[in-house]
Image 1 (cartoon, rainbow, N blue to C red):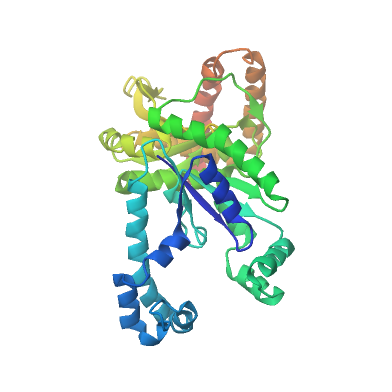
Image 2: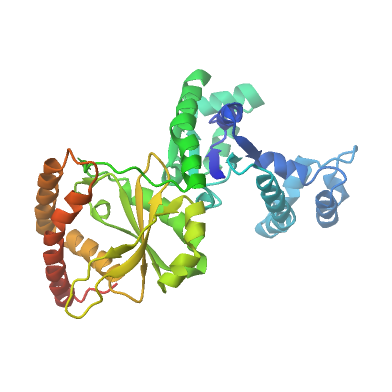
Length: 397
């Protein structure tokens, strides 16, 4: 299934987006609703809350008095931790249960208000953030909940900042306008991204080849890469030695294809094979065939430096994931080349000129294969200069 995290600040209109996704066919799991379910009358969760915090957290009807509980549970960090120890495991088990009930081709939307605050982004294939202008959010909270402006702004200030949500967001949905405007954004997202993304993961479908097309450097590439790397690390678990952003998009100011190159270093390619399905399930589909890097010292090195290769399955965020063994030299060379280009702007400019010339020459090709092969001779010579620079500067991984 495709797992989508949905979040947004109070008053941003997240429920509008969740409702539209449900209408389109998503399986929506509401974290707030589950949090209420696990402490409903008759549950062992409510019984433990009462045992921990006292009978006075109940209403005369035997239901949880949330205001009374909040006064006790949020009085200090220790009390909050005691409440979390009661509710969080139950919420987690129920969430897993509901996800397990979803069909194999489901698009599961997990509606989580504190997704950013909890650092949960790596759990999902995509994170959607709903946002709106703060003054509008304050007005909405007054109209829908009778909340005065001062209280509304305090609630907003207590949550993640807009900058923190932007760092976590793969998709940013502006809900400052009317409901039909944000619903149109959601409709496009569903049909153009979520549905094909789910199919690509389930069918293990690789990205279609395209001719080389360079774009101006995007300052958000590193942040995008880090979100993806967090998912790679989560999928690889203890098999990951390290995970890095490499290639041209990792060099500030360098023109590049709008494809993020990531590298996962593992102890051996046998371990890479053990996690190939987990990576594919996480949205990085293993490519068929024999993948390798050309050795730089053919006189003494093996004929090929074998690796594994995975495509990003997201149709709107092309990714190449190179899985390399720490037993070989290729993983280190990829990091050296990146750092050398970052430290030597003149070399980066020459590289940019070569890339642009070759991209124009191969603009009519069916794929980027010939473009990549033709620039490799410059790259191979650059590796030699990068190695000298490493010795001169004391560079180490």
